[in-house]
Amino acid sequence: MRVSRNEMVAALSRAYEGAGHQIGDYEDAAQLVTWSHMCGLGSFDRIALPPIGPKGGATPRLVFENDGIAVIDAGGADVCEHGSLAAHLAFSKAQKAGFAIVELANCRYPDLILRCLSLVAQQGVFIAAYWTDKAGSHGASFERGEIFPHYWRVEKFDAGKEYSTVTIICTTQSALLADAVTRQAELPGVKRIENSTAQLAANFDLSLEQGIAVRPDHWDALNAAAWPILVPSGSHSRAGAGPG
Image 1: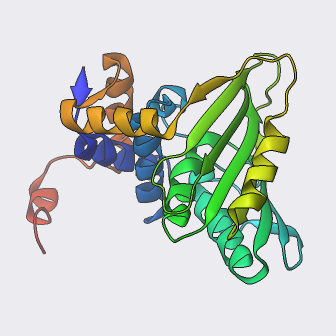
Image 2: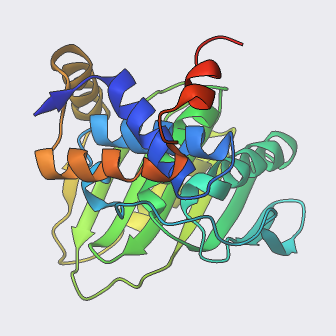
Image 3: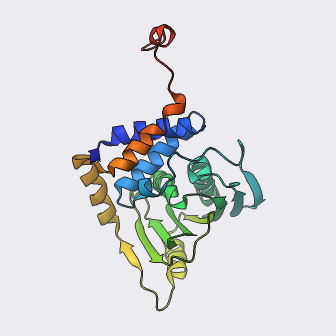
């Protein structure tokens, strides 16, 4: 079946709210999952349904920080909770030092960081991220001003753990990012699966025009996950419905 982007965002927002995520967080989660899935990376098919409740407390733990480096412990939280913070911290440091590395450790669903990186790249910097999960090793790099990344993965089905560390590299200089990307991608004898910026953009546009392809059982499970925020129909609930 196919659903529109607005339908997907609304359903995911309700599901994450039902799981206990706070206002703002559940909206961010919906946008991150939808964006990545529309790019053709299958994020919606991999998240838990119902979504996992918030973890790590209201504030992530800053393990280490200096002018160009920071390490954040997400405490087992989804990337949707702290991914934006990590990406914008890398951006802030790169603006001052020219090059920055931020690690978001102990997090779930690391691939959802991509939309956060996209928003940073559009502010005029080069940014990339690397992580390893149950499916293998992954990398994505954004040129300055780009909406979509160049993405690659190496499938190693025995490589992943429940939690991952996302390493974000951000710089104002293209040569520095190119060198970092080359070093991260050096895996001799291993075949990489590549997705170009143009491919991801085309996938996104196709989903926008034709709707987002989802499995009916996943869609049903997503809508069922919103039940905790629903209330029985009655005179009080009907009186409170609509514009206030």
